Amino acid sequence: MTNASVREFKMPDVGEGLTEAEILKWFVQPGDTVTDGQAVCEVETAKAAVELPIPYDGVVRALHFPEGTTVDVGTSIIAVEVAGGAAPAQEEAPAAPAPAAEPEQPAEQPAARQPVLVGYGVATSSTRRRPRKQAQDPAARQAASAVQAELNGHGAAPAAPAVPAAPAAPAQRPLAKPPVRKLAKDLGVDLATVVPTGPDGVVTREDVHAAVAAAQAPQQTAPAAQQAAPAAPAPADRPAAPASYDSGRETRIPVKGVRKATAAAMVGSAFTAPHVTEFVTVDVTRTMKLVEELKQDKEFAGLRVNPLLLIAKALLVAIRRNPDINASWDEAAQEIVVKHYVNLGIAAATPRGLIVPNIKDAHARTLPELAASLGELVSTAREGKTSPSAMQGGTVTITNVGVFGVDTGTPILNPGESAILAVGAIKPQPWVHKGKVKPRQVTTLALSFDHRLVDGELGSKVLADVAAILEQPKRLITWA
Image 1: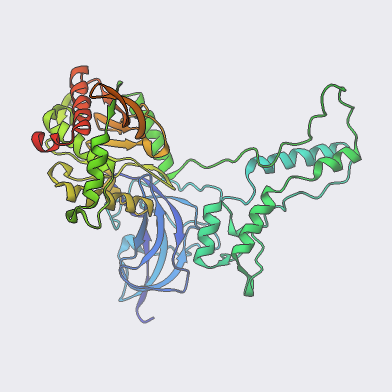
Image 2: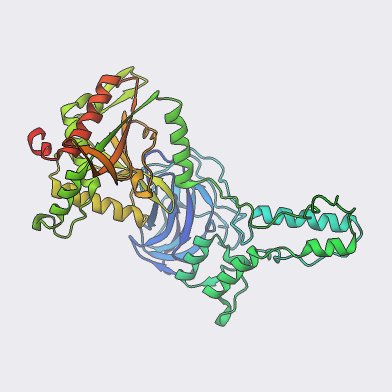
């Protein structure tokens, strides 16, 4: 390439104030041609999984870190050879950039904060690496090692392990098609430990399943131990203890990404804001009938219409009637900040853990607009494509535990918010209606609030308003 130079692309801050991200998947390899705006990798931060686009054209020369590595913001992750003269000083390639096959030699760290694709890098610090997942869980490997040590201690010949030891790291990335890589990731299998049977050494789906089956197979070393060195007989009233634990008894999962951020946020919230939770059980039969009517309304054609839609609208109306509930506590300024807008958070369970994206300015949306926003929010969350910005700036949250058949719970506040509403399962129950016991659709609501800025009266009013609207949804018209 004429007048070529090598530019280093650094890990950007893809959220607000994030310090690190884990490289989930590389979409390119050394020698590939890339163009401005092309996604080169997928990374997971404490907020979401996002794809990183490269900001220039060129040819990939080196990937500085393998998949599964957690990299500090501002650290170079990929080297690209570009045309057009010398690169900017802060993006000069190191004299000998580490190739992708040698993750032990990371690229040079920047001397100070440097501009990156989104925001600015943080101060220089060392890069931490997490061990890649193995096909066999650590508890099983530890148990197998203990049995082997016991055999050697008794002078017995070593027995063949039930699961082959992981081979040394290959010189090149294992060959596998994208669907097979996704399958391996979902099952927690490191492709480097899988024996390929496909053409030209390609790992197939069958190879991945075989690796999982091998990892779950019961260990066979205990009988050999008993034959080689019989232990003292156990008392007649109880069986002899096994030489090792079942390999399927434990699985260790690294705490990182969304799960790590959620755990920290919940601990911080629980021990910072004094929680109070109130409950109310309400007859929502009329609301359920309205849901069925709206499904037939042409104005809602193609939209997701369910009880959550009307519950969300009921909460928005209750906030309008009791605006002080929509606030936050500013510890530094010792002030209560009342919000004149509602960014409505919806807690969503995803494969990466619990996230709480929010609908911006939900208070200003019509019912059809709210339905469209809820549908988009849920679909995006399930696909794992929720952006970091969608999870910032929430003011109040709804968590729908009823979808799991749970009656209700005591929800923990989303950090920075003063209230969260939990919705329980809607079930037919005997209920006194117009003086007679009849089967009615009933649910239980739970409202948790920050008692520093929300007293019992205010919290009770909000919960009572939500319940009243769901019992008589025509109040959506008269109170809105």
